Image (cartoon, rainbow, N blue to C red):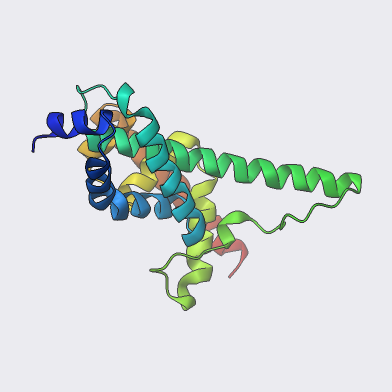
Length: 192
């Protein structure tokens, strides 16, 4: 079945088509989520939100793009939304503690909560540091670096997902690498 026919079935609410979509994209979406959110349970929750959004919004899908590109855009946006909410909760909790109203939200930085299934125990500290450094990058650099270097997307896929030109993607990725090198070099200089 070609993609247009498949999308028509999805728009019509065909349950078999939705099952096929989940089967085809479940691991890929989870892989992207865990690249942005290195905590297995949170990444699974966000992946579920992605599928809910896809089901809810499939009628708005414009067939001039590939379905996979559209799904990855939703995934990236949901991941960034989750990270923003997590940071807002932590800031709010910090402000509450300052004002004396203690809330039961942990104060440790989120990206220390590394629970990525592919990370060995002895690498957790180094990995946490890298994810914390990535998290400090400007939003555009964070998205492109994560898609390219953590999620393993090809440049052309990143162009389609972000809507940026190839030269822009390459330039942003170059700046992200330089920024990360500086951040990590400063950390290791200050923490031998």
